[in-house]
Length: 72
Image (tube, rainbow, N blue to C red; front, side, top):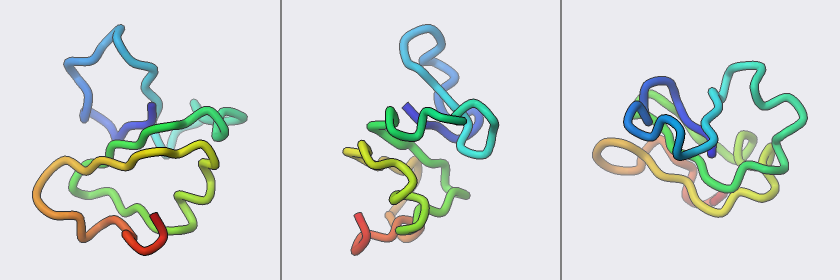
């Protein structure tokens, strides 16, 4: 599970959580199956290509303008 800071405060101990910009993901890009982004996050083709096992991208907030739907 990939997350943006503070997005999953209630999931402590239930999910594997990593910061997108942190060093946590070093060598684990192939394990990420889901991505949840806060309203400030931008998800483009370059970012999605980094995670070959990615199955779903979810966005907190209204709309999906920050997600490159064509690339998804």
